[in-house]
Length: 274
Image (tube, rainbow, N blue to C red):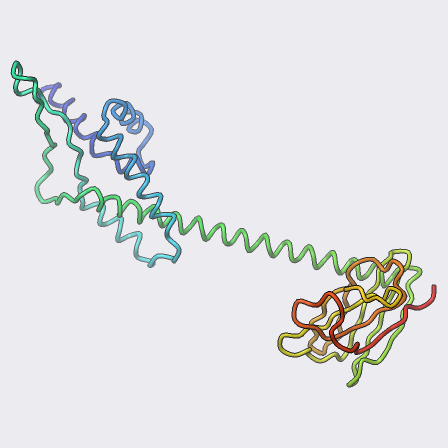
């Protein structure tokens, strides 16, 4: 075979590399050679654009984890399917008669079937989808880990704030009965301008209900946090500064809390004198 014929064969083979190029699956030398070809081949340029867009859309649409054997099945299928090359201009067979150029296609080896481009695109998208699922799973794991770290940090901050109030040098406490054997204690630090409420024996508030704490400011009740009790001893750093509050109360409110009490307080506590 002449050198010219070999060169023509290599050039024709470039038309079959659009799918591999769309998935960035070519080696450095082959990619560089294909990109030079791409600059002069509008048919391959269009096919690369279509395959890339299809793979991206289908890959992003994957939401459910694929079957464990899906990747091996797709890769095995690709190995037996030859991509249909684009139609390209062939040699001028009518020189002198309008220079009409005939389309040519490279012969494919016997025993191999040729499939339309949309089948190849689907295969490429399936492989891309496996990567999309892995990326989605990785992002979900990273998000979950970030949320866990955030929750741990908040819990540590609240624990430290509780400890700071309860161990403050000026802390003062007072307690009261909340009925049915339950008790409530409030610890106040004027220096830190914060208060902690400690409950023991409070039953569950009921479906769609929550316990709500209040600061008492000259007869006006100011929201100070929500408490979901299960009967075990609990401690809650009350929301907001003590400021000029002279006491606190606890009521049962709809889930999510209220802007002002809607039920009779289970208990009212006057803050201890400084």
